[in-house]
Image 1 (tube, rainbow, N blue to C red):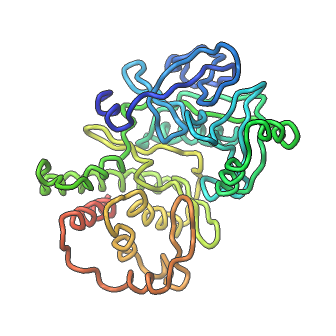
Image 2 (image 1 turned 45 degrees about the horizontal axis):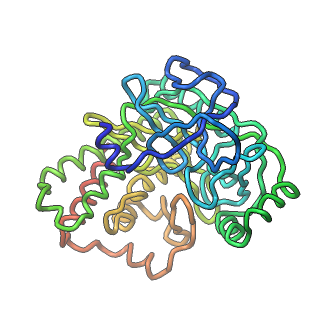
Length: 360
């Protein structure tokens, strides 16, 4: 499994071990000292313990541990202009109108409330016997100083204009102190369902893959992921969908379903909530049917499976993780037209995958 993960994620990335508060529900599965937290950052401090792990979704780390994979979620990022800085405290940014997550984020970390919410739901869904990751605990970084910005566009625009001297002066004059958090879990694998689908985009992949076998496999994958979501909905648990006019922010997509040789299960519960709202459940299914599916026209196929009462024609919007921007009217009309007959294998595979999700 490590060889496969190494091929998917590339070289390991560095992280430091820093002092922090650790709250564990399964202490035996935590690989560090009980006062240490992993942190991906640019360090301007003295000697710090240094380790290496595989990246997972950029802000998270995974490493082999105890016969499985230990994941530390929301621990900063290892590179780039926006990575946190360790300099007399932890320096990062707060985006108060971000089109991601809940909309108010501590850049590349969780808020303490988000971490507590996710840990609560991870424990609860495990108690209900639902397919999900195993909770280990959470950590809290203290002495975190943030500069407040509106969104990611403002963040990167700001960082492109300032050098270190001005940046550190702004942190001294403009920042305020918050607590940031990270989350710990154990998995049998960290391979996400959407990562498998990218393989089908490689040129001439049909020379090494049998498409009939691929179709059977994708039907099973889709059915398994759809079943995961239905089991949660049967307990009135939303994976994570928040109305944000004119669209919604959602966690319901195939990148939040993990897969091994025999099963799939759900992960990422920081936006999870309890709700019996049937329309939100249908929106989560609609999102699962097309978000993070890199194969062609997945959204159009998904939209054709839902009624206008569920996804109203006059109020249609693109539902995705980042930008709930209105769709072009002609594009909406074309989506409601009959779908063309499948002309290539990838279109057939998308339909098979979505058929499986709906069946599940």
